[in-house]
Image 1 (tube, rainbow, N blue to C red):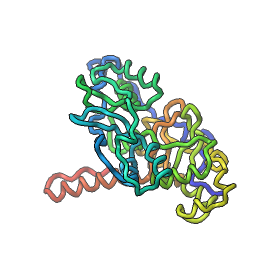
Image 2 (image 1 turned 30 degrees about the vertical axis):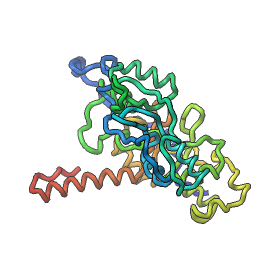
Image 3 (image 1 turned 45 degrees about the vertical axis):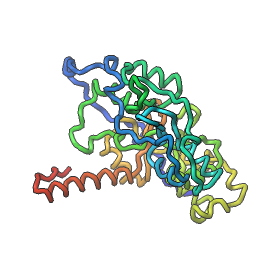
Image 4 (image 1 turned 180 degrees about the vertical axis):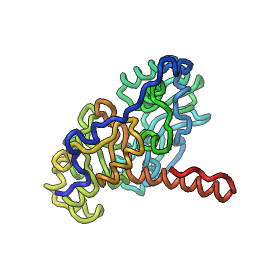
Length: 322
């Protein structure tokens, strides 16, 4: 069966980490060390949220989760009230349909694991690890939400001691464009679960991970079309015994992937040379951190071109081509 991915030859690109030269001793002596940084120094401040009083259709909620997996829910004065996850909305869609109106307060989870903006990074890392979370809502002294801290933010803070700044746009790390904390399935999930997840989440690739979030494989919309036949609308009418097959039997095992910190240039090479549609991004232990699609890369390129054209129309100096 043809797959949407190509197995990596030998020690191919999946195990290749981008190399960085270490600075000379004392080069970054003036930069704060991660242990000296506080959450407010590295957290993401521009965070999408939902209002606790909002009432939306399930379909409208699904659209809000196209590029995120968690959305904090806030009340008056931006006070953190709860958290809504993509899986919460997917389960509601499967149970009630896409047209049903939902009150955010009735679907959110609470209380929410949060951390003070004044907390030091080592404490934040311990909190994440202890709660088995990839992100923490950040609050100020009054309990108002001021940002979100992800494991990617922590990794960036650690890398800041020894990773040189990108010298050009194609040296930008893939972490900057990937979708963090993507939806993923275990190998024992059924094909009907994979089908519904792809349909309602509006994605084309699902990483397959073990219980420790380590990457095992990937399953794509193309794989399901080949096995279930027809279009996505026709998948629910596939034979019952086929829908009960396990994802582990259909996935592409040992898919191509990128290490966290790999450059966009490396991603472009894999997209063009290997003709894949998406690349999981993993840490040193092959734990899934995110996923980068060729659409993400094209969107980034379009934004750079739009900026170049805008500057040209305003009579400014166009951005230098790369």
